Image (cartoon, rainbow, N blue to C red; front, side, top):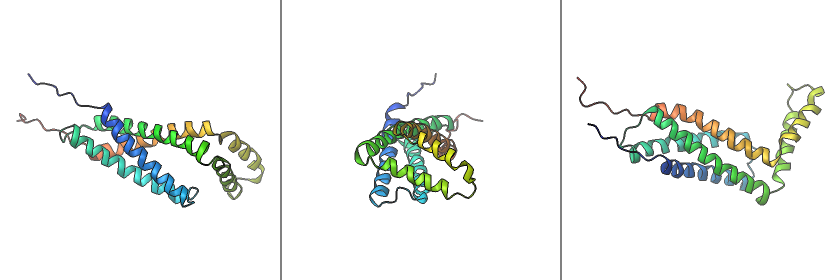
Length: 177
């Protein structure tokens, strides 16, 4: 009778999620201190770094905790847990940044968003007031934190769907004829 080996899940999810979250915070702080927070290319760079770090974490999980083999489903669930952990850490950082480190950053964000709307030629002038009003309602700290948590988790879930397909390594049965 084959003995099932119990593989850890929560501990590596927390470890790798913390790694991903801290990398995201470090990138955000670098962009903040270099006054690059509102540059669009920084979002693309952050996304690329997130993909690389999450993929690395999945490979490390497969090697360190799964004996070199892991199914697509197991890796996807790990990616989801890592992404959720990183998103919680990111949401806490967002709160600290906007509430304590730079309380005026929220207003700066609002101004940047308003300028983007006003400079967007695809939005008719007749809609500017309505769109700007919606931005004002949505750009609050609690809403940004919720958005950070939800959207971060969804983003890492999608990345995990793709990364798990490349990282998976199924164990082949030895007795196969």
